[in-house]
Length: 195
Image 1 (tube, rainbow, N blue to C red):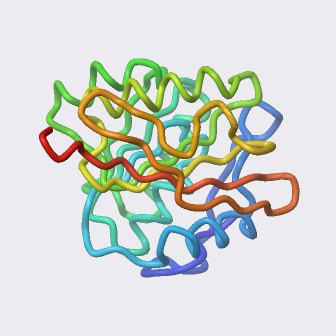
Image 2 (image 1 turned 180 degrees about the vertical axis):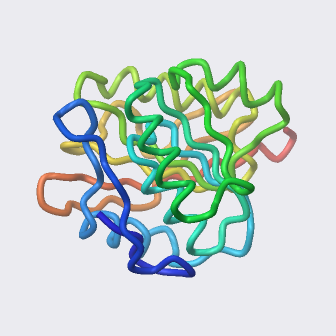
């Protein structure tokens, strides 16, 4: 696994051996960043199931100002720390040893809101659980208005309609693409005009 583009292009990333994490393959990652826009002009990227940190670090390499990498597996968190250190990205990364279901409590309390968010949960997560999490995060202010939300699943993410209301806004599905066994979906969070 490696950084595909940007200032750290070609730099290798470590991954946790075994089946406890499921790293996004380079081909899938490349397609994902082509769908959301290959480069960024600042902003905060959130990787809610960071694994190796590859998606958040790729976003930093492509111009995001900072990344919040969330992981609940302590062994995976150690791998993320190694990758962050190897890239010299410590100042731009906030690591959270946390279950993603607690993000709606922690991030608003720290004044963190995401412009770009990645959700690639482990196999055990149902579509319904992921949909509930996205709606809860949107309602809590974790996503900035206009935030791009990238979801990776093993098949179509069908637990939300193409437009799903959330408190103060709406989640809109913009794109869906299948790459091998992965289905990528791009969503946007828009505030209600009065909100």
